[in-house]
Length: 539
Image 1 (spheres, one colour):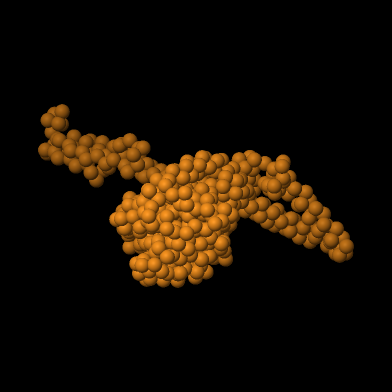
Image 2: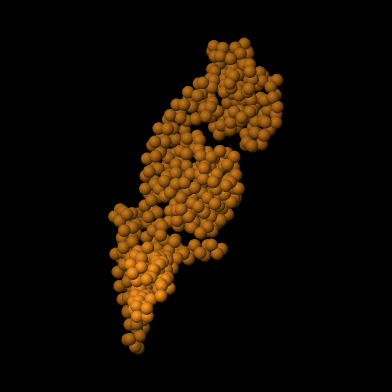
């Protein structure tokens, strides 16, 4: 056909940027015509045809460009509306715990992240200065570093806290991610309740962690950022920890060899008391030190410690200033044993310190009738032949391990009982937390209706002209009475003050969202949240 008309054309098409639009015609500047000389009439007709087609294509493209421009403008406007304020409200704020503990990270990593108690308030302030963190708390012990936050966005909150942890410790984000654990909302709450109950400790049910959780609340009070949700979370954790210990008695029963040794001896004493018992400890190493601490915890105020040197004994004495610890050299061991009712042995000696011939020469207290040997050493410091004597009662590590194993099984059973208590307290906390969601709605609804009441009252009074103060008061009282009666219904459904007939949390939240939509209160609540956050960041 090109040969018949004496020309050839090449067309470059242009595809609009909007993928929803189909490629249409050609734009005129992109149409090029190459032709051989034709006669004037045919050339004139051809040029006229091309001009008409180009004008038609241009008009179509102009129409499309305008429509595309309108759509682009609308999208840009929508993006502008979804600005900094919207990013805080697309997600509901979450309770998050990010941490490392003895189960997830080695000590050389944990020690770099450790935060001293005196620095906890500063850590809260630094965390709450992050863009997406509303509230915060830090629990740092020898076995764990855990950061609890209320975050406006889960993803951004985790990112910011992880980067903060990396910054203060010098541990890279990638290394932190290898060892950290993260829990959200109910799972985070349950974790803290388990921690406070001693279920997450190396020694199941140990009591020290509850005191540390209490310290978090104590140091956090009055710090900007340790606010209602985080404060309530730790308050409920303390209540849970106390309930678990009281109702299950999970911390009873020794679960370490040293504590089992002290408790076993106590059980064998006539009055089950160390108050008047003469106690001798041989060896002041690591296990010996633990025995001394457990003896002190059980009420033993005075003891004799035999050791090769006095240095270790002096350090223990300095640590336990309320206990009278008398040092004796190893050369006086037998003389000290003759005056003791209970003898604990904890040395690294390869040969027994007490054999049958040694023990039978030792005088026995008439009230006791026998002498207790509690041997926690391996190899044994007390020969098995000593137990043949009627005046001696010997217990070794294997005897103690049986007691420890039985106590551990008992604690595992109690841990299952503790989970029931934790679940109950978790539901109480969630109900309390949900009730907090209604507080901003109640305040904003009251303020919204108060503005209408005041405005309409002013209009009414201006129209009435000169009236007496008594009449003004009557109109004012009328407006206030109407507003209170109007508020009564919504308030009854939004409040839950411990009444038996109060709404379930899910029903209350549904009512709250309906009230927010009806009176357009959500925007004001959002603005308050963002305004508070921005003011904290400025500080």
